[in-house]
Image (tube, rainbow, N blue to C red; front, top):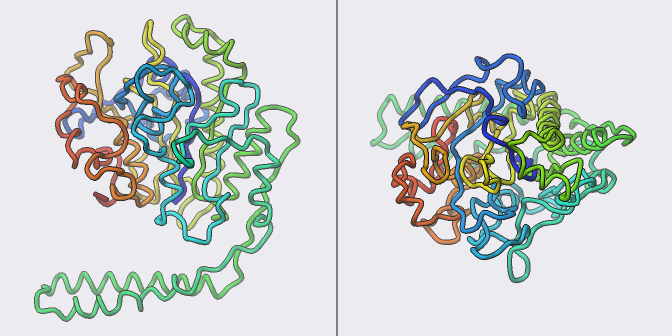
Amino acid sequence: MRYVQILNPFSVTNSQYYGSLTAPTKFAPHVDYGLLSAQNPAALSQIIGAGFNPLRGKINVLRGLDVQADSHNHNFCMATCASSYGPNIDNDEAAPITNQESVDVVISKSAKVYGPNTAQNRRHIFMAPLSSDDYSNNRTFSFRRGATNLQMVRPTKQSTALYDIFATGFGAQAAPPPSQHIDIIQGVFEDYRSTRDSSRISSADKKRLSDYMDLISDIQRGLASDQSGTPPMCTTPTQQAESSVDLLVQNQFRILAAAMACDMTRVASVTLGMSQGYGTRHGEHHGVFGGPSGFLGDIAKSGDRVAEFLKILNGISDGTGTLLDNSLVYWGMQYAVAQIDDQHTVDDFAVMLAGGAAGQMRTGYFVDYRHDSLAVHEQRDQRLGIPLNNLLVTLMNCMGLSSADYETVAGAGYGRYIDSYASEVKRPNIQSWMTTAGRRTALPFLYTGPSRG
């Protein structure tokens, strides 16, 4: 499994991002979905352009994921920590008030994702390939614990520096599976035998158990066969002369995809900035309802770049599927969808997920988690949804992590929870989401993997 998060600054309006997407089928109360293949054939929206058309079966577009924030201004931590910084602060780089590391950092530090011998500089790749944006070219949406507190992680910006992290692995033979991974039958045989011979197991369950052990044996034989031959080569990624920003971004995405295909890294965080800096694009963000072409063009370009990266992943064979099939890619934005007179919003984050997470995610859908009633919040002119926190729990569940891996206080979940949030009666099933079990629950309909608790 690989995890990649791609975030860009600012946000767009709901009509610009979601277009005319519909979710006509009900899965459960306040959970509606529609096939992306049945939506507008030209493009899903202004931002989710035609580049995603070949990928519609392998992506999901989500609506109705909200953050419980103490401060809305200039956060870089809401989309990846499900938390803002504290009240009365206005500092882009301030850490989340929850004092929890961002979801990507939590994943990268887990022993369930990496073994102890993985090089530290390969465990987590931080990228920000656009240097034209003075707002985000030295920032990420990642927060890691320093000596005393959480700090924003600085990115790698140059292609040569990114390549150098993996240079010794490209062109070399991939390592064969370690012997302890091959001898998997021996590790479970005693448990199998005692269960099989127990008087408490029914004949039907004994047959199921026997069939399961036959499957494990087949897997072991396949691994042994793979080990007997010459290990595959780790292909050196093609790089073009970086005569344009697009070529620079493509080079870096190819390096990252090749490194993931060779299992030199499994976690990456990418910041996609703007073609113009803060002085231009921030003002245009606040005027987004006027339709500034430069700002919207930059966000649409981010979408095009995400689509190109997904195509790269989808073109690499990986076991029985592609690298995209065995990955989870999260594309999000700094804020939720912009509203009139309020661009630093926390309700309705524009979210795309791509990849099947090795069979743990349904793909090919637009899923709407907002309240069924169509009623809007009086002050925010917005139908309310469920905690974005549970999206981040879903990402961690797909990577094998449970609450024991991300909770700093048992039962508190991941991210910020505010008492007033639970009192908003037009929020879907809010009381269940605010319980310990609810806080530990992956997104309904989409996640089909095991319950991690």
